[in-house]
Length: 251
Image (cartoon, rainbow, N blue to C red; front, side):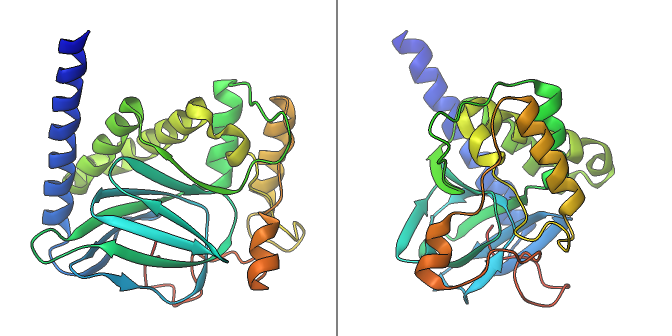
């Protein structure tokens, strides 16, 4: 048992080293790069703070360094051992808490398309547990080995332009499945538009609500703490209110 645990730790270290290497080669200067729609790499060599903005639902992963997201008065910290997920549009401030020229922050964000989430929920048949109906729309959790395996295969596509078109949708679905299987079902089911009739994602949101009903839970609204603490509306459809050509911050 100890030998197996030790080997697992060595494998995790090797995977983390590969992630840092691949991301550092893919983005050699501070900034953000969108590899394909919804998959954004981020690098910073000094601690920084972003401007306030409303961001689309995303899965955020750190390969090296530490990052913080502030929602109202609450701060969420994530690092190579912990991912962050938020499942409704939220007004956030992102900070790079730990970075240097020698060990720059490198990470990525993967947009959570509600239509894809709904499809994976239905096809997987995973029973969503939401006993108290109060799952928060944003949280930080530990990175499991199966999720890490899917993450490294997604990052390998940065160097595989030919394979992206076929493999990226498959691996994205696998990551969503791993999140569902790892206990994020109630949170993922919370993706709902505040004004379904006018929201660009209205059709996908309705599909997500149907999926939630089929699997025995109810979709949840945005974390009300966000609006109470900040006065911002969470109904925005953009990753961040900035020009379309500029990738989102959360990576």
